[in-house]
Structure formats: C-alpha cells, structure tokens
Length: 182
View 1 (cartoon, rainbow, N blue to C red):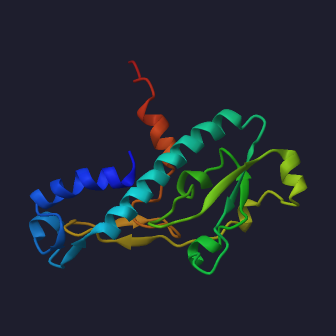
View 2 (cartoon, rainbow, N blue to C red):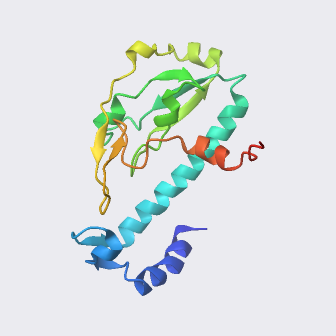
C-alpha cells in the first residue's frame, strides 16, 4: 500500500500502545535512553522494508536468469553520501552463487542505496569489467553489536548494519521451500 495509507493506519496503533513521539519506557524500548518515533523514522522503515522486498524479488529473478547472466556487479550510488564501508564494495563482480552475496546483497544498512546489476559474459566485456578474484575482496572486520536489552552481543559482518548481514532473497526463497520429509 502507499506510504501515506500505511502511516495513516499505523500511527494510531503506535500511539495507542505508547510507541509515538519521545518514548522513555525501558519495558517497551529495551533501553533507558529516550527513543523518538516520528514521521521520518516511519518513512525510513517503510523505504527499507520496500527495498528489502524488492531485493528478495530481484534475487529470485537473478536465480532464474543465472544460466544466461551468471555475473553480479555491486554498484553504489556513486556520490559523496556513499558510506566508506559500501564504497569498498563498488565494482565487485562475482558469480551469482558466490558466498559473498549471502552477506553483501544490498540493502546493507538503513538508507543504503547500493544495488546489484546482473550481467552476461557479453555485458561484462562491453563494460570492460573483470571478475573480482577472491583474494581481492575487501577484508571487512566484523564487529560486536549490543542490542538494547540483550544479554549477549551479536556479531555483525563488516560493512553492513546490524540486522542487514544476509541476503533477503535467499531468506524469502527458504520460507517457501517444501518441508523436508524423514
């Protein structure tokens, strides 16, 4: 549904449950810090959820086309707002089924504008691109992230935000796999 309709339906529910404006309730937020929930935050959540759903759909199409177009090319927005941790991923070219895409298939954080372009051998040559050797992949150090209220930290892959270190398309396809029979 359109973002305006989504907000119109969601805001009264958030208000009813104490999740609107400046929220200072550790039982709700998991932190003693004040958390602000407003229009900008909702729009960011909507945009990110939309991008995650689009990425899942793209992955499904990429899997279907990988016989003819076996390469994926990581592209940033190419401007001054690109995060340095995403800039080092720009122009990486790898096979569709390379393990790299299990973690670094965008979006890779809130507000991420990176994308992946699928290419055939011919398209790869026409752009003057080469497949990135594994030895040339950036070594991005993982970090620990303490989620508010969590007893232990989680390990976040380098270059991605907490909660973004996975391929949404793979997760989507797994959700629809038939159950394994014994």
